[in-house]
Length: 365
Image (cartoon, one colour):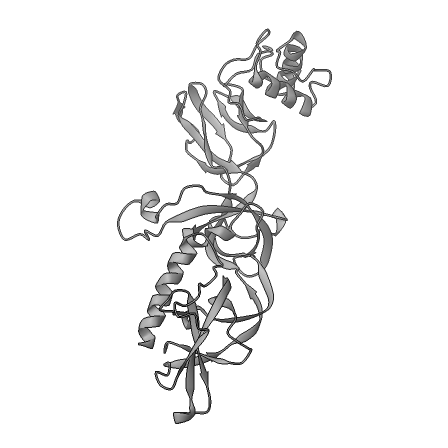
């Protein structure tokens, strides 16, 4: 009978946790009594009620990598004559690749290059160009608006002269590529000597900052919120602090992303962590790491293992308190309890006269 009750309790808890909370409150038993004396039906094993701090921190396996993977595509036809190397980090104004000996350089911005910008044009791409010219030291007197003026053309010509390019005063796909910030070359998808066509991938790049990505079961997703503090166990030892920077909105099983059979079908969400000090994030790219999400901590509470809980006949949860010396002198009481926070395989309990050191029943391991 006792074994059946523990199974029922476990099933009910799975439903309660998956329903979106780490804390629930038990309902009163149908008979309204706080406990029930028993002289037999001793549990298979017992553990003590513990008083202390309880945390709902969660650990997960993650991967050390870089954020915002994207492709840089060729903007003009020709022969690829130079290309940045894998692992290189590129900043504003630096060369991504060359076509027919002409460099395509990185500038910062979120709008793509979709035309040749010239005198009289207006738009967000023009504003971005002017911001970059000023940042590179060529547009100190430029107004930061979206108009391509004669002053903009003059600043472009100065920039082109310094890079020994034809001084046209115009800028297009054959000259620049916009990205939100510094880039890291993850992979070269073309080699020098290749014939390029517009739209053909040349480089696969990421942001330069290191991040950790991992997946959490939906039942544990409540702890992963933007700004949640984490500790990352790095490859080869050492730790680094960080915070959750983004949480996916769609839960997927692994098969839905990787294809094929035999994958874990438990719905999971993707979580990304940014480091407080990126210099601490040492280790090879794509290294496995362990992530601990630091949740709430309850101080000086009573707790028992989750598998000590019983599903009471009238609803709610309880524990079996075992009292007395060994043999026939031992007695069992079913005590109704209120549940608090779940964490570390334990659950906070209160009510029923529970105290530290009391023995409660658990299934035999």
